[in-house]
Length: 630
Image 1 (cartoon, rainbow, N blue to C red):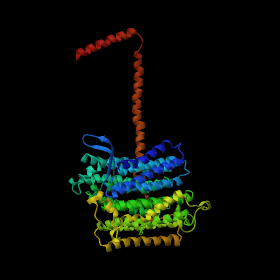
Image 2: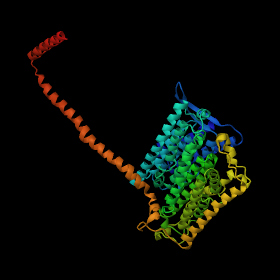
Image 3: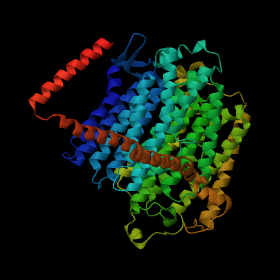
């Protein structure tokens, strides 16, 4: 098992090196086989490791070498596969493989085909290091690696300056969060003389619940999660990240990278359970993000932007679960979300592919007969994310909301509201894209076609997972055994908040409220966008009040620009002028004085030997007199 553990991240890294070093020479077919094949093999190895753990096997630890040996602590370059990391391995390699296959068709005609796959493989390697690292430093390596890959892939079409700006925005905002992560790591190292998970978590018993040190350390770690998982106030980079190719949006900004913050908090559960203040802050930021992103999504008209804000909102739900202590529930929703959100992004890519690059849903419509496979899978993903039973999103979202209901009724009510809005904006997207009459150009209508099998087969597989994925953790109210809870119990142990003690009648009633609310909003969306055939207004339309605020995304980017960007640019300009007109001038004046003195001093070199002798004698006399005087 140790060999398999080491090979899981190593294979995608080898593929990255081969494709990255020889991308100008190797053919696309070889690139496709290498990139997809290595991730597939890693997925197979991940299944083997998962089955071993499922059958009662113990966690596998592999130390490749001692990285930073010291007298006080020894930080190793080591990997661990336990129940939590095993679940993430299946998501990263499984969904990652399907997205790799899809990319063969989507990027087939792109001149940067080989470069694109080298970046994808590097991302998979970095993400695997993140989830397999046995200490915070290893996690941070993967953390920074996926941030780098995000920058490279968002700005993949670098000839477009707007895409470059989006890549820089993502990179900088993630660095802000990473600073918090680093400071949290420093605090943990100073306290525990180690960054190893087992070493730190085994010593948490010496702290009381609510301890100031633990609260500050967990808050700093959470700042890192806010940046990586796009929560308020560091969430505006994610919608702009849609500038990258659609497979990038599916792999990095829906299924894997943005869930890194969720995984980090879940992995650090032993610390967070001792910091109720931090958990409350996590819940508040999570619900605020979920509601804000959902309200913005209602007025978006770019098919990928709707899904981007949906991702931000769903990540908020995962943080609500973490804040309620439902660590398994958050990981459950992370898993199901990877299925249906990857499906929705890839299906959106299929729509964009059919329309020759068009992303505005106001210029779509009537596509369900033209691209039937894409329509059906998009429908399945939409039902799943809307929380309609028995699709996967229903079970995972319900588990989170049930825990929240027991702890905080207000956050639960807001969670229900967000869930209802999710159903509305997702079915709005579905109806405007696939129903009614086609609103595009005649040229687009003439070229409408279904995507090739290399793109539709991954869609079908993800659609099946979106339907059945929730059955991995069927609650007791439906006769299930909560299998995922049992599987993850060796990791979370007693720190996992136990299942809420509510009657089956109450639990079914809470489910009914969420489902009925979602169905009501779906019916409203049908009446508005199908029956009444309402098309969203164009850019030139004058909007007022709340509609105008939501359409312009609460003006958050404009506020950041006014309060942060402009002052920094002004300060930079001021410091530049000080540098040029003050510091540079002082330095230049020193140089001018030196040149002037040199020009005068050289006159002493007359070439007259008699003058040199007189000067030498006088100098000796002067030194003697000076010596006698002191």
